[in-house]
Length: 164
Image (tube, rainbow, N blue to C red):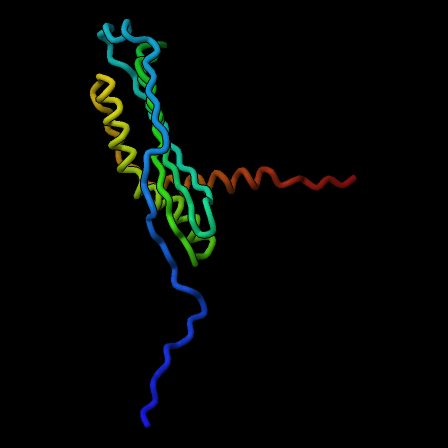
């Protein structure tokens, strides 16, 4: 009689990473000084701010949001202000906590970011301005910088023991 080999028991379930949905969560455009500012012939300054946020939605399901704020000014007057929040819903299971934070801080934003870039450029162009193309972002370096800042902040909050 032939023996059948049974699969070896696994100590942990296989990791799961699935994109459930990518969507535009919020967008806004303000041109507070139009139309007068549009007649000014000076080059505006451009300020771009990016942020990443992750939060649980359900058991093993997370929403990761990448936010871009683009503000252009001529002297102290705003030409336009654009804020776009692009989000993704991801199913992430069976990962160690360290891996979870890396996936949500690096891999997920890398997936969401190209959609954000397109929406920012499109919104600015539809407002009548040349599109602002956001540059590529190294989310790993950004994540590592945030981790270092959080560690430094935590170390600074350690209470000092005073003996008298």
